[in-house]
Image (tube, rainbow, N blue to C red; front, top):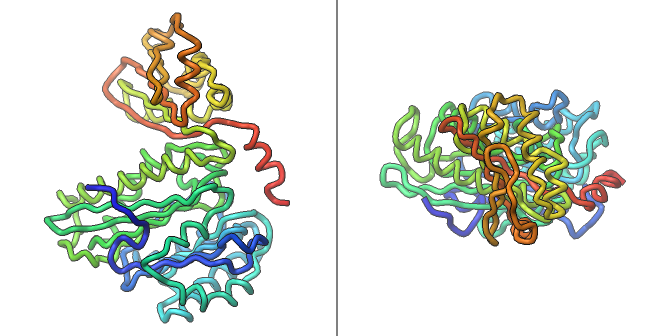
Length: 403
């Protein structure tokens, strides 16, 4: 498996487009994206656990009940959530794609992101659908830009791998930045691949993957109402059809893990107002679930995130977050160290502080990526969580997000 240049059109049989249709006031920002498979594809998705769910998620769930889809349409600038006509608008978005492309409206995944509680006017989408379809291409990466809200950079990736000697490809784009917090889903991720795989095995792979990837991200502790991860697999690579757990299914899951882990890092690093990517790696835990809880507890700690913004090696905040994680640990065994490109420094050993150079620690914590290593010395399990620092700009961004 290797990373290659490209995005969601790297796999065979996929096209994409992204335009400004008028949902967002800024005419320089794209706000409508379309992803198309040239043939019917197996489809799978996971959805937000927030009890308040955006209308597009409800429509998407209905549309892919049969396990297949051919297109994804997504707008930014308006979440189409908590609106009386939300499902009607989401359904009409699917119908507009169907009319313009000749596919069934039931073969469309629909998504929206942006402000909650404001009615989404279908008119600009309707007026721009022909342009959106006309712009479909393998050469552009405009869809990644069109799904952005407060993101500062496009998030996209592609990998190439082999299944039974057949070359296959997988690509993805993501929207992250704010309202990012476990559990699934916490963002918009659209994944494409040319693998021949059954809908059941595709759903199994995705559902198993998100436990250690997207469920392990937190930017701000708020679980979104709208977001989901969806994947389309059209079989154009021509590999032997995967309909059971075999070596090809394992290889497929490994490729998926590479893509989703890459996206986790990109999303966390571009959190609203963030200046650095925070990674927490827990090792030697008694069980997997405990390792996950501790890693997430540290990444979610506002005090820890603020300390990292200030490059302050306040390791006590790490121990504090471990303590309230709900995991039964032996505090007197815990080691903590901070690491970056500058170096690594041990700050806590067997639950107690050590004498260390504050100057060196500050230089380590001033890098763009900082890793917190936690050794529980209680078993063999491990887990990783991703987050970002808490900055002044996070408050500025969210202080006037709606207006």
